Amino acid sequence: MFCWLPIVNISSAIFDCSAPDLDSCPDESLPEFAFIGRSNVGKSSLLNLLSGKLDLARVSPTPGFTKLINIFTMNRTWRLVDLPGYGFAAGARKAKFKFNHAVDDYLKHRTSLCCVFALLDSGLPPQEIDVKFVAWLARNSVPFVLVFTKTDKVTPATVQANIAAFTARISGWFEKLPAIFTCSAMAKQGREELLGVIAEAMTAIQAESAQAPQDAEIPPADLATTGRKVNARDARKRRPDLSRPW
Image (cartoon, rainbow, N blue to C red; front, side):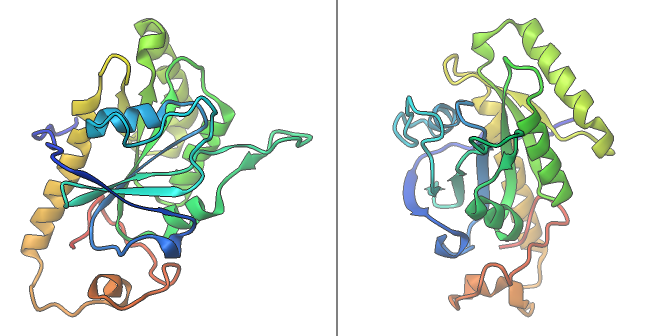
């Protein structure tokens, strides 16, 4: 059962950068929460809903507009990360999974990444590309939750049927299924629940940080927070929970 915490009150959202690769991302001094989905899943609209800003993420009529890793600092305490979507390779004889290499690096090696919000279209039955992406997240031990978008476009019965079908496809991979949420940017539904995930993670981080010895030796993988440049691929992630002491 999800432990509800007070919603994160977003008072400021500052654009940091559009990074072409992992090494171009900002330092890892703040916890990060990344959003990703296939083209046309409604990611930009959802990010604008969460932030309370209509123009935080550009909503384009052309699917797959996001090409870079777009990073925003929220409340000066955590980062929202808008990741490029994934798709099928055009012209392949068989449908072939195509994944942005920068996103691959980010998800595997970004030590400040706390959780990925994997977006799925609630109006569609399980799409093979989404199933493969969730399998990739599970295989690489990336912490994530599932978010079914565009619930205003279809009936509640259709939403529940598609969620049930998707969880049936992936249930054998987990002892406990990842948390599942629904949302609609148009109906402004789901904002509190998704920000609650971030609030819970932030509370856990703060609690762990308060318990950590102040004079503890900084391990090599944490040197990014000391101001010395560290190659991101050499700083392998350690995610025993969804938190890490900053």
